Length: 134
Image (tube, rainbow, N blue to C red; front, side, top):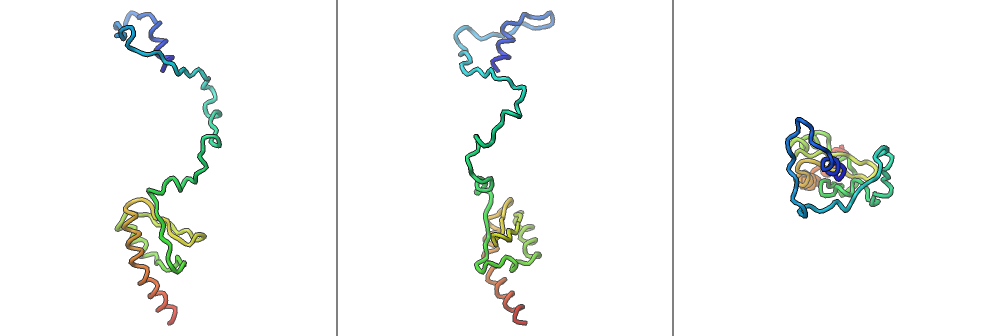
């Protein structure tokens, strides 16, 4: 910004320029934070290791994500048709994390989706028991 101001202050009017409106003397502070670095290699100046706070990217999104972990630890108790219906009703995306034995819920009304899954879990467990006995 300071380069633009300096350029226009010292530039003479061209024949097609209108007179510029200049601030009154003493009403504008000098740019005391001048950045005179060269931006020729702007992409090379980026150092994510220095600017990173060490926080996992998903941890920073905790206000947008929640998890459902079945009490039995078996994430296969949720049939695909039920997960699609919950996604359709709440606008939430359900992503199975098999290694952690949980579902990640994000987007939409994920709190409502979590409540539905928690209320549905006892029924799913009893259905699983019923079909495994047959």
